[in-house]
Length: 166
Image (cartoon, rainbow, N blue to C red; front, side, top):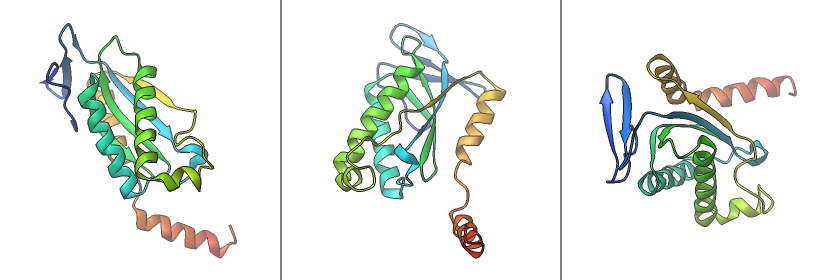
């Protein structure tokens, strides 16, 4: 688990499964979400990733959202999280996308002007998948941890494609 929930909530581990509890309920709703940068621009540098991680911590502290895993690639992000049942998965991704975009543009104003032509940071599309307990949760966690391929391999691949004018 990357971030814990606010003091009004807590987390209990039962085997490999995390159960969250709030003021009124006990829940283990798990969500796998993915969001792509607008126009699939490769803008997720280490600095932008750090900004997003800091913002996710703030979101976790403010809302009943537990961030379990975060995986970055150059143009998209995967998040494995939990939320109270009264908060729909669509609401969770809307909160995450809107707040992270605002913070990224505040910290990196040039991103909004140059590569995104004054538009939004995240594309309108999204992936939302609810995840069952036990095996499915382990598979999703592993996928997100291993999300980004070795960056050195990207350079080699680009050089190979240039040999064929691709």
